[in-house]
Length: 225
Image: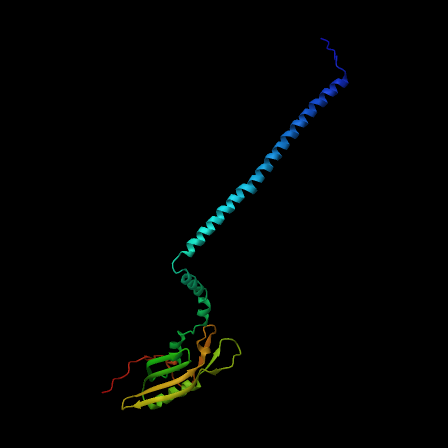
């Protein structure tokens, strides 16, 4: 079978060019339509959706603010919250009162007991009352307090007197024992909870901390008739 091409080559090229042109125009129209749709969506998102969202958030903020303002005693609640924020600072500044019993066991001779302890952490003063075997033991206790020193845990710290103005304010003796009242001041550093403190007691005094079988440190005062 024999076929004849009756269309010249120029006509064929023209037809192909028109077909390609129509294809490119169609693709361009589709791309342009897609870009236009994306632009419209972005415009709606920015100018409609986001505005509505911002308006809703503003309404929620105003409603919450009004609710907070209508809360009873809101000023007191806010003040308490501010006070809670200051607790860490107050905690670091408070004296380490738990060291008291350790200090007393270190400085109290084995033949002396304590019946009452009064500490003023504002005036940095001590008042001790109690009983001793005799008046000599009371004087030993007073001298021990006078010559007790302390040093911080940091290396090279110079020992300092832990107690000052130690005064035997009152005493009484009987055939069996003696009673006493001692007032003194202490260095606030020994109760500073930011520093580790070590007391040094004169070695000539036997205290409960150095005794193998220490006796009771605190004792009720003897009632005398």
